Image (cartoon, rainbow, N blue to C red; front, side, top):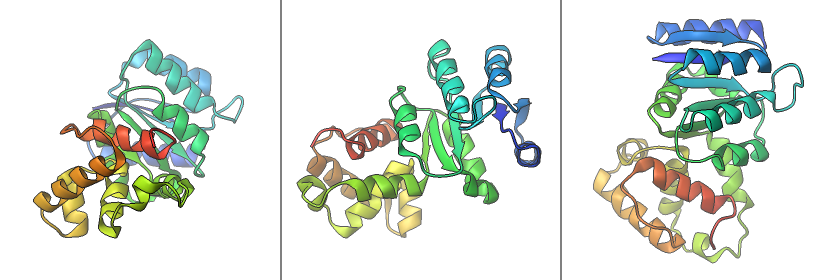
Length: 218
């Protein structure tokens, strides 16, 4: 699996290269700036791009904008964005860009090798990997009088949070130590209470839930 990596800090970039190679990834390019990232994404045709939000020369959202431009040129290009802090504007831009193959993680997650590699693989496969802190902020932002969310049971809210992170029914079941059948029942209840269309496609249901939490239908 070919990866284009963009990170301006040399030690972190070098560490990520070594980590990904240790798990069997091929590093097609490892760059440190926006212009280099644009060229690498155009020339390398990677299976997934792992991109720091802030890159030279602007050190604002250069990495994210380069990745979004690459997705417009190559629809569906899987992109996993790394950020130092939770910035909901960046998460919204990424989510608004279209179908699947997207992820938004805090850089702290990099230090959990298995969790990070799982996120890269999930995004490369067309799935979604959203940082738990992003989901928690979206849930917290929902007002107390949001009646559909208020109707969820505590267990349904747990399932909703894990679903929004991009977990499959099997992954949610393992996390909560319940059966997949129980998870399927909870997810059906959640979609019914939120007025969303039930889907067997893990990624489509994640995107539906995220759109709802980020200000979609009420």
